[in-house]
Length: 463
Image 1: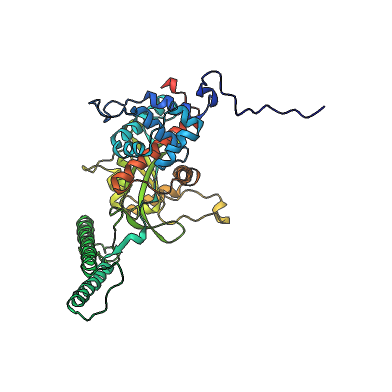
Image 2: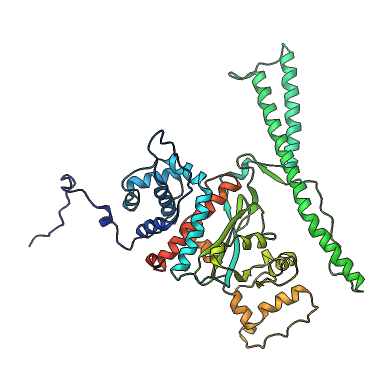
């Protein structure tokens, strides 16, 4: 008997219009996102109410298209437009329409408030589905560096900007002397002295603005550090008054002068050069996330231009959406640790406890366990009431129960960053500026949460 093959016919047209829903499995992510977006309250979205111009795409379509694209690792607006032609699931979501890349990019850039409201509504939706248990939640907070839409080679330091301005001044003087000298050698074809002088003057003005911005940042930084400096001085004075010797070195007053290596980027001035994993420095933003430990949903997110996490605990905890309920426990690594931050989180302005407990590593965590770590040991005694705050904080993670709680951090927030950056490939912002980066971080967090709810089999009908 001869071999039999399935008939492959590219020439005969379909006799009846196809139903694209039959081309995508019923449990596909695109169905879940379409249903979820249909549950969102999109009132208040900015649209053209006048009815002039071309017909506009409805907000729910563009929002669903962006969420699905980011949830599947497609971030560039041109690639999203191409997917509306090439991907069956995207054609289904768009009902076989094709928004162009400019429409997609403009909607993404201008709908920051819509994305923030949608993020909060999805958290509320996950609570109604029973995935997120609201109230007295435990969150793990961490930050990750995401590349800005700018190259570090487009940056200049305060010192280098000053040196380059002097070089340009000398070049301008040389060109002006050349213009006055009739016997000087002519410039290469297509070059003229007036244009070369103008080009150098414009560059010098750009460098002057860059130095002024760096100096303004240094003054603002000194103003923020002044309060911490005064607090340290007051604490040392109080210790001396009590007859105790202050610990540590005498604090130095903050300086309003910029550091020679303070940077300014011409492409994205609000981004900063930051240290990245594996060594080296890149032009980045510091993306923060607060992840609930049981559901592994992102319940709070924000973007900072600070190169480290030292001052990020209080604002990152404040970014946890109210729909997730009050936070009872916060897990952080040593990068977030400071006495002022922990006290601000655990006590209010009146000094009374706020019902929040911080568990933190007091130093760099050791990978792996030694033999003595395997031995059964009794919990250490609790420090005296008047012991330094660091001893009380260290005791929390020295107990068996405290260690078990703190271990939830590394299996909660770090896998989320791994999914976003390694699995989905979100390593660089497409939008520039701190506001643009914050908009896009909200979008990828929203997309991750819906992807997570789909993976957990959340029943949206129960919401």
